[in-house]
Length: 493
Image (cartoon, helix red, strand yellow):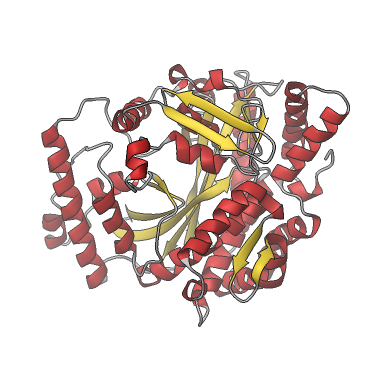
């Protein structure tokens, strides 16, 4: 949810100074890109994975501070918006030389270690898109985590909106309508973020490829079919996150103002295009200024942090977010893919990341890029369809027309992903391990969302209430999550 800030009020002068600093940062970034001042290295990847905290019965536990104290020897864990969430950050490393398998091993070790410590304080970690036992009373303002940045962001979003939030999600058979005076419903969304550090000259192609396959990713990885007891979309995180951070009232929507959670509206040529859109279309939520003079830093041969531009970017929730960062004295850029849910298992998570890293590289390297033959609107429509239908989604793809996601992946995108991973130095053994998980999901038509809905449907057919069925399903889910087999191989559906 962004960088640490202090709780405070912002003046008109704060906002004017911040806007000027963002525009200055933007011009310095343009110069750095033109001068080749941003590193070009082997593709590196990083992962962030969010977790729920639940008790033995699957009820959410408001205890992230106690859990973090219990695992204080592992600084890779931190709080998230809700008191029932924590997040782990896996350090970046090259994809070549066993990087994917190392991610899997590190993620499993950290999950097991943190879960053991969490159980000492009455909680357990759950990798799932939305906890099915979560209820509206769990997402009130008093459940926001203690870090001041969360309460400040909550106040800024609601203040910019000027009215309560309305959550309105309609599935094929059930509908949820909920008003909220806080952004806390967003905390119901637990996600996986995949970061790819790339050559600045290739950013436009990789970002466009990521946008083109976003709907496919959601269809394959859907793992959030229940929200506050209702069965709605296959992946309810997407509309829930969009609506619970929306700074626009109905009047601003009618005027065409862009939402904070944004797919975008065009293909791009450079990372600069996206940062320029951020500065042009979005007002500041957290206008915090530093003393850095980015022009002076650049003139002195140092690398500017561009703190204001980066903070502003962190309050605009693109599904594929551009990142500028400084590490080890060098600037680099990344694509942060934010569309995937958490879970169901560690191996599913790494398989999702491997497919993404491979397919965007493979598509970016093709002589006839898919985004030259596909409208941006079609890519956005694919995402909407995948959110609703998951594994059964029918999407548009150039050369195939309207095609089922599973068929598209099996016939077209898995070979592209394999070629993309090979070009990045990933071993054949790793490629086989992770892409076979994606292949089996397609062949069997089973991902987290289909497993959850089938398990609940079977329980309800045996006479259980929806509440009983959701609780029982979650207990089964957690047990199989710890066994660790990918979800396509789970029993109980």
